[in-house]
Image 1 (cartoon, rainbow, N blue to C red):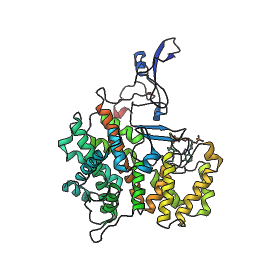
Image 2: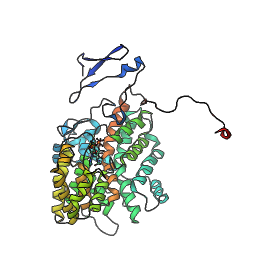
Image 3: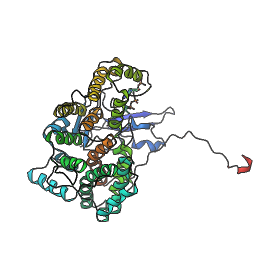
Image 4: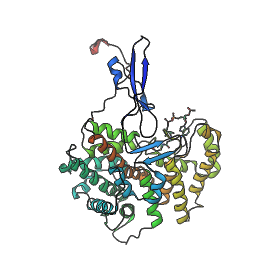
Length: 429
Ligand code: CMC
């Protein structure tokens, strides 16, 4: 896209000036191209990236004020309603929705890669049974780098594509194995007759002793969770994947770094933290008191607030609907924990503190409830997020590597440490 010549002029207190181009996207905020700044020997200061666009991307668009989320231009509500996770994955990776043949070929290819190398299964024995499954995910996904040497040439698009398929197909298997190991049940090999979400449920909940019959309402809910979490532009974990990838690191290692970044409670750990919070509140009679503690800044309401959305998170709106469907299907509407969650949502949405701070429930508030209702253990919540986000991470990584001008990411800093001083030998200090 040709940028109209618009400029911002920067004037320093010593009188020097610099003209900086203003760039426009196809949607969203204009950005000032500050790359010329270092000619003046200056850097910008923007810790936590409140005002920084770290890259140019064509994948996902968010308008936080309007509460919009598009994957490759398609509104998330439409995709959640009409599409499935495999199709969304194809879209994110390739930029366009597949036609019938492309979809069938993609699905077939995906199922061919769902098994993991038998030797990889032995890695699990090295972990304690009570290890957090995210710890296992970071380790085992990173270890994939040691198995697939035939797809590690990142400059070769065919290698990148093969790595992408391998990762997308194997991550659910690795995740379900982490759960099975934790509870001491045998690993379940993937089954090609199932859809992506069904297969995951089967590997999580199936046993060799019983036939597994997927429930369509529940697998659809899980598929929605996968769709809603598939990508979210330059969030902390995606930026981590891009930064790791910018050094030329292999894709399996990069995705492992994304999983590590996702683990934190301010990011992917929020659905787990939200559920723990509900358990801590314990009873509907304590909701008002708990909300008062949030207002007194003793703690945060987990599953509420977002760096970008200052309106209802569009994913939360879809997830809320799914949440009601699942609770109805499982006849859990009157379950204590879910009643408590609904009351918390009601109180928070009508309280001036939350309204003034533009704090709305985010997707993780509802996805935590849905995952709990599906029988997914709380320590697997962030793992499910990682399974879903893998396609976003790979798409963003691929977009970066495919750009012939990509360079290693290297931020600078504002240094406020000690000025030069001389070393004193130990006995003189
Ligand atoms: N509960 C209570 N107050 C909050 C919350 C919350 N969840 N989130 C923000 N605030 C207040 C905060 O205290 C501050 O108030 P004041 O201006 O009076 O000091 C103001 O809102 C701005 O907070 P901030 O920390 O500067 O905002 P941020 O953009 O850095 O934080 C956030 C975004 C997601 C880290 C934060 O809202 C939070 O900690 N939420 C809870 C964790 C959570 O649910 N995270 C999941 C995010 S969605 C999943 C994803 O996309 O990764």
